Length: 482
Image 1 (cartoon, helix red, strand yellow):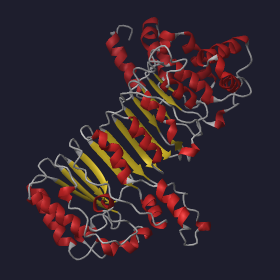
Image 2: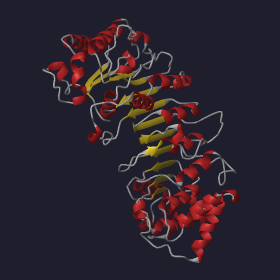
Image 3: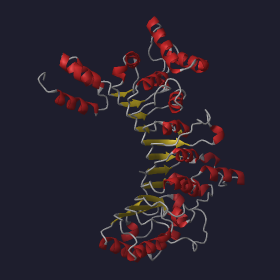
Image 4: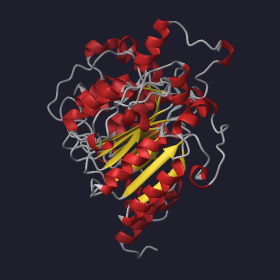
């Protein structure tokens, strides 16, 4: 083993780093011989996962603060903290620990930030241990990190201090651009905790971040903000891709779009929490007009997003906006009008589009308005599309007929895949079987008859023929949560 070339050893280390907890086997390898130690010691710090935070992490963080070269080897951080881990171990009260904490907080905060300095010192010390505070120290030191994942089970009370300081180029990030190699940031949902949207906002001001992913987003109204606006002005934002799963409301994400200058891919799925409805208060009444208005303002506004996306008409390649079944149930329950998006033809680079049918035809889930003024798909869809997915189909015959017309006219020159999804019917039975199963989702039962009628079989056969003759892959399906 000692004769193996360094390239082979590095390959072994990279494979170990792909495992959930690579630090244990890497540590064993460093204890094997001097050659292995020289190769694998640095790799032990290449990927750090703070799940199951213990005293070992505290010692490691202190070591990284003392050794900037070693800290510079960190490339991936998987940061997790929980209130349950507080006070589970005793840090002691040694002079070494007191000196280190005092040094660290003085490096992070200015003399004018005494309140913040006091709170962080308190959280770092014995008897008030907060893993979030120690993980914050780790983030400050990992200046060469490339990927960060946040997977925590409780609120962010201290970490936003670090992110906002980095965005505003404040101490300790005042001498050089912060995290110059950080390209991807992910925040995953954990347990029932949902993320406030302003936690991710500072990342749009980092110099190299290209992709931001988040899940379980709770948007804040302006008056609910905890820390106020960042007040930053910048001419360019490197973020190219935003992906959000299970967002409750949509107001704060409009602020993200205002910051972006190079956006190429946007994907948002709106969904309500499983416990959103309180059945004990369900009287069958959606409430007074003011309550309805508040619910309407908190829901996704397709036209507002179109306006926010117009600056990216020449760069946006992928746009996916979709609703989950509970979100649609919320629209129905509260009689929320869902306006159309408007034409997508202004987005000349758009290649992949996922859209709710209501955003094409302008037909609400709850309003039986006249659909005669709805624009034809030839006035809505860009010719640049390679994949088109239409979800939650409201009225199938007009849609299928117009799609066939576009194929006949040669409109879709670049289209490779067409996907049609509906929440109303079991998989493919709407094409080959009957009768309709109204029990699939109770909220949609009143709308099934409106969506499908006797024309459906012939229109589907026509569309299938046109797709087959042009080499377009046609997919049918029921609503899928993913």
